[in-house]
Image (cartoon, rainbow, N blue to C red; front, top):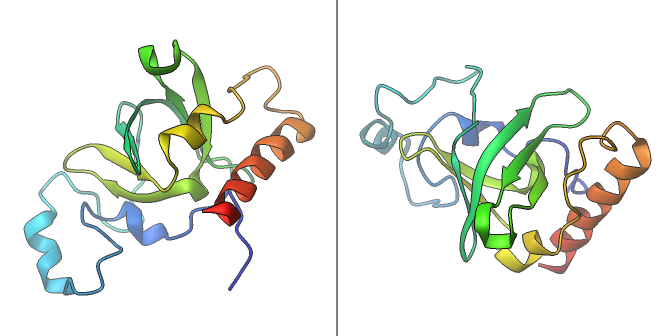
Length: 145
């Protein structure tokens, strides 16, 4: 098993459809009933801005910004009133699956883990130390879960 890299997609196929990638009993032919005309095909660029974000135990907020930088893919999530308008940075490695029909991104972290994460700082994001700190937080939370 490869070590967890928070800045890269764990399963690029998760962007291709609105079904649960974790259910091994689901047959591929069943995908068509879950994928509607708005579901993107494989390799289609997807704009996740505005999608709702769900943790393992409830709603976090909505995606305010998304990056496809080759070395650091991430989502900026506006938590709204949940944590007093704090914006958090979620590396794409935390994404469990994406439901395009419902416009929901499911992450494999709890609300508490997200709440305790370092706040998004657009001024510091370009600094390697800042990205290392964020990456280390999510890598550590992945190893603890």
